[in-house]
Length: 233
Image (cartoon, rainbow, N blue to C red; front, side):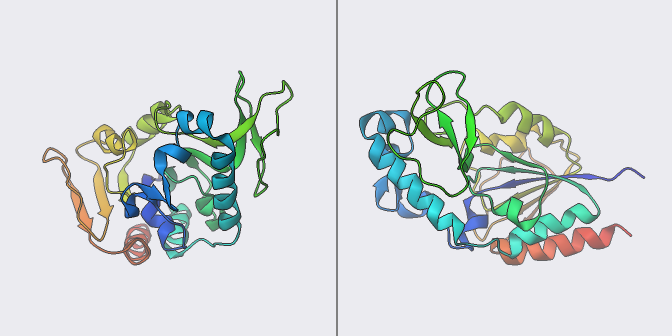
């Protein structure tokens, strides 16, 4: 029998319980900075040193946090389902929890990217990026993060995956960050949908087959994973 496909859309609320901060919880401030100062091409052009220092701090923090029960619960679904995670998060906690198929819509904190074409990407782990660190062509390295105002290159792939879901789970995101929030629009009306959020998000009326789980990510995802795994004998 073919395994069913689960697609999980995750946002900052999943990683928050591991201790990673989210800028939306602080009125547009992220660790005391206006997000456009540290998460836009314009901000990088004006003060690249500030932007590099900001992400170096995020990278150091990431090295010392651990995946939580929500990450592990999502990974456990791979025992009986084909699972693809589409994440808005730039951390690597899904990977560290054991998940195998992850689409990082907004980039990855443990990677650097050249500012010069063809914009090569480099794995850097938890190392700092300094002003003057350059690619082979001499282009400054920057975080491989999709900043405000930049295209989301993996959006088409994510939409195709969402359309293929037998079960679609939304967790840790309030469905207000676009274009990621539009992924639910690609999901079939017949597909079972679960939205895990302590605060029930506003979802368009035409979306069918939705069950809301008004719990924190860890508790809600643990219960849902147990339910879904028990469905497959």
